[in-house]
Length: 336
Ligand code: FAD
Ligand code: NAP
Image (cartoon, rainbow, N blue to C red; front, side, top):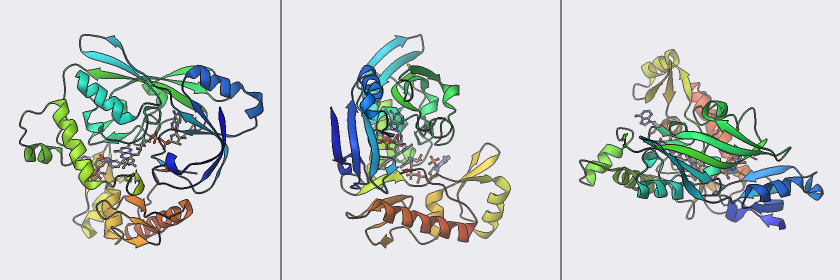
């Protein structure tokens, strides 16, 4: 069924009240192909929606919103050292993580509690605490919007990068991801040295952690630092961490000895949150929006913000970081 004039407020974690001209919920590939083949909808632009946790709606969406609700999690293969787990694109990402932890499939415990759906995870190669989707990715299936044909993409075809993939660049708006298959480990290879995981495990009195312990530590840290979108609208990190030439980092370090920098190949990754905080934005309220008091990288909606207000705040932040450090921030959130 096609719904008309749908308010998108419940469908985006910023809680912005843009209107969609049309909305179709799809729960299978064949259902999606029927919608794509429907002649009465041929002239409508398409907008693919998952959990709405990485979008900023600055205007009404004059398009057919395709809300991906394809479900199902299945163990499709097993080798001596790996489990191959296929998930429908409409499964909430954290539900898949919990399913894997319950069944002893290791590798995505550091990616616990990331909002959104499985289908969007490859879009920006989701990452947290030193693990990225690409580390466990096997293959995905996607339906081409123009033809309805199903195509498989291997990891190299996805062109994963830091919060990047081919679906955000060359193939933007051309495919709907319908399923993702992960290759998970039978033998856990824990990564607890990133961020505050080790400290949190120590605080919990855990010296030989399991994947469940690591997941719980990550959940605890995230809950203590990040605003819950159900309480305070937000889209997580609004900006990417900028990657600069190491020589530029060294120059910045002479002026700002405290500046954090992490090796990124030959370059250095800066912490966008730190740069924003130094410019005085952390916890600052601007009208109905602002930068969060516990993590400056997260922009929030205090209740009545519009997407344009949030976008304008992001422009001001980008300008002051550039004026202060000469570093250009890039938005991670997809702006419409
Ligand atoms: P949406 O916001 O619905 O869509 C995002 C983009 O993907 C849009 O361009 C949309 O058109 C497209 N898209 C969605 N589904 C499909 C599909 N099936 N096929 C093709 N295109 C599609 N991200 C991280 O990487 N790491 C984190 O640690 C993290 N923490 C967060 C914490 C909070 C509190 C919040 C609110 C967000 C966080 N995010 C994080 C960002 C976000 O959760 C992820 O990027 C997530 O993968 C977005 O999923 P979604 O289903 O909500 O996508
Ligand atoms: P944090 O631990 O306070 O660290 C600040 C920044 O420093 C992070 O952005 C992280 O980069 C980087 N960093 C920290 N330790 C590092 C290490 N050992 N090696 C390389 N880089 C390191 O960050 P936080 O805000 O609490 O977030 C924790 C994790 O969750 C991060 O991985 C972050 O990306 C992820 N997260 C993402 C979103 C989102 O919307 N994208 C939202 C919330 C949290 P990276 O960001 O590159 O990891």
